[in-house]
Image 1 (spheres, rainbow, N blue to C red):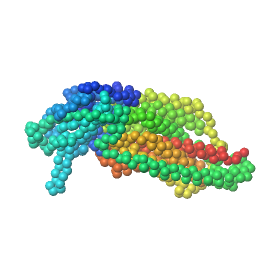
Image 2: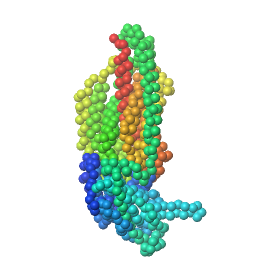
Image 3: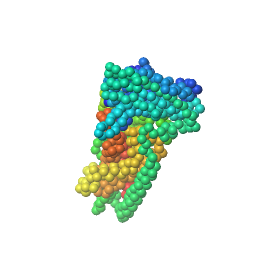
Length: 609
């Protein structure tokens, strides 16, 4: 169902862009105090299909009661990114003053408008209002399917809303809307019948919208009102078994890590005992009459091809590792809650720009260590490795949202703001980090020197091929987060409010630990086969976790959600692909540094004169 964007004034976009720079306002949590009789503003926000969370349209694109001049609320950057478009409504709500069936407006709907409402109701459109930063949800209308022969298909419009608002002292604690004991106005095909005694004629339908307001005293303090919203169940709840599932996953992962570490250490102990017996020669004599990882000591530190791309992957991976850690700790500090619309979006944008210096520093520093010469190209590649796919994906998704009239389409001023943040903050910080990394880079610490002529690599069995290592190295980290991944998807692509950030931190730490341990184990098996091409292999082995995550996203879309349509599907798969890329870069970076530390350790531990 497509909504034209021309029906909402352009002043909304200008106002939102001017105020979106005030990002820190998102983290303010003081209570608004009201006196009895004070006006409590109710904002209308958006509507959209119940099963497509990211397909939303401005509330006033529907033929509903609206003021003559629409005044929009000043929005933060995070709210704009979240698709919010709040505007003042005709509802007059005063603090602690009950209202009974007050007329909102009377509308005469044309046949086209009736069909538009019917289509919205049949697609299970819900609306979202906002009162004192509390979201209020309800359905636009009512649909009933009954009987087989004859089949009955009834569509009705809710024209009366009961607002139930809870308060404590001078603060609003909670609000919701109810249609209990209210009969919907039937929307017949063609709108040609009388409705409830209201005059109908000429293909039009006249309806009267009314509302009631009821205030209830609550014992819940303002600082805990987020708990009340979390307990509300307009959208389905799926997080009840969270703790049990996570504990089960943690036990399996700990057993897996223990198994890998114990086996690997026992094998290494035997290797050291064998290789260090009666060593009389130096480094260059170690390859006489032996095999295994010791024999390739003169090739294991041979620098890989595509050095600039490898360093860019390591740099961007380190950036996302820093960003993810910062987001989780900010959440643990209580900086994100259900009443701060889009706060996590704003934080992610700001942190992505600020942590660009990390990617530049790590990439250019290591590029200099491995004798890279084109450091300017390396900085450009690092800055565009993720931002270019992000911009391409966003362009496609945003164009489809703009074509459909969705509120998820960003205004031009917000796009310029984000582009300016990258050009004026992100890219310069990448350059500064790269310059600092280049100047502070030391020499590459290799325990053994590398010969000029590379050693011939023997034919490897099938289970040591890259694709097999990618399957093993990607599946095990994915299995460590598979349970938590469902809840994250339910939060991002559903209606859940994620609050168990302590568990998320534990799972994140376990993910990194599993990735590092599996990478070390696979690297050892690779070197044991006298294959010294571990540089890219270590990145790809656990970096392939992103592939499993994208495959899981396809499974989630088909079997765990009811999403459909071009708009929702494009956004889901586009951003799921970017999410998989983020995990690949992050885990690839972690596994590489773990493998490098492991290789330096084992070759430094050999007795070499």
